[in-house]
Figure 1 (cartoon, protein in one colour):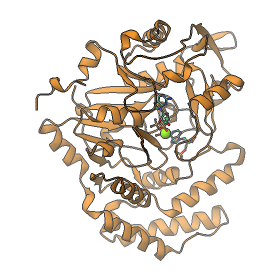
Figure 2 (cartoon, protein in one colour):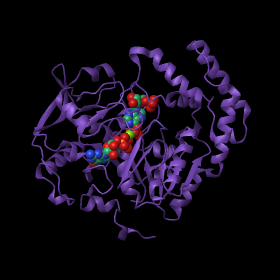
Figure 3 (cartoon, protein in one colour):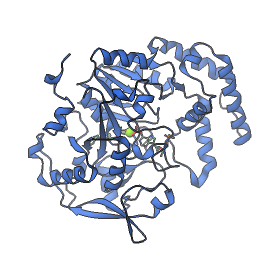
Figure 4 (tube, helix red, strand yellow):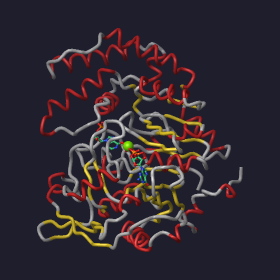
Length: 435
Ligand code: GDP
Ligand code: IMO
Ligand code: MG
């Protein structure tokens, strides 16, 4: 299985950055395919800490990194991340899709105004302009990397006229920055990035044909997916595995396997239903022990027990056959632990996520109690506490996927590969490489 798609299985922040960084050693290219600077992916390598919003995590290991057409790109954020990597002495080998849509200061302003107008119905967005940029892309008034580099003025005029009208008429506000200044700033920053711009689909296909391995790095998580998530409390892109093809410009036929990243409990930032949310001292414990504060926004994450109904649903829509379980260390010393195995509503049992948000808001989680574990001292799977292995087996059984990686701390080294045929299938051993 050469090319692997890594996706979040919950509401984001599952530890995708950490796992992608761990896996990147075995791959030649790491590609982002959706989302934008709403993401916050943390990589900890000894005493070096990186928090990426847009840069694919593989950059830390000096891998070729790709920002695909499905990403919405804030070029100012990317420029900052390039500078911070360079000042850490890392050489960047980057390709940005010429087709990627640009997040402009208009989009960021509209994101905030929209949230304010929605009041009690607000989504709790990251205010990075994600929704408005994807809306303009679908409305065919967006502006892409290639449009700015080729001075495509008609597309720019259309976008700025529409944005001014929306900001003025709909939100009775004024644009923060004059139109020409925005365009000049965007053009200047894109001219600096110009050497990185190209056709990502063509590049990736060429890489695949020469035997290179591609790791697709998802952002957000299945339950934030615009189609399959807890709509309207979702992000504005498809975060499921199939988006790796459309968002990078290759066929789905080149996606060989899907690895879902799941936290050993559940968190969510922003508004929206969360059946297994807890609000007692246990939630406080998870928040503090798991350091559950937004990577980018610093917001405290809502915390709750592992929701296997949601995880099973995420596995179905992603076609996940492999899982990485993260933050198992955070549950140490909690005994017993609870896992949600079904939802109950009006005396009936639900075994999947209902489409209607108000229904999901009303379900009662059905919990099973499991014995906890008290310390994780080994880096060998066989020597992990039996109760943790039992927890893993329950997940595997109810989600019908194999756990191949267990993460027991934030550092790259706090990672255990579960030995056996399933991790062998992912070819995480260099001896398996034939190039
Ligand atoms: P992402 O958005 O999915 O990449 O996840 P984030 O980086 O936003 O949040 C995950 C947080 O948990 C980061 O602070 C990671 O350093 C940390 N983390 C990842 N894996 C583990 C783990 O196994 N144990 C602990 N304690 N922390 C982890
Ligand atoms: P990573 O990749 C967690 C959430 C926001 C909000 C909703 C919509 O780090 O896992 P948006 O700004 O996208 O319009 O916000 O989605 N959200 C995330 N939550 N992790 C993320 O990314 C997220 N990206 C967006 O909090 O509820
Ligand atoms: Mg994050």
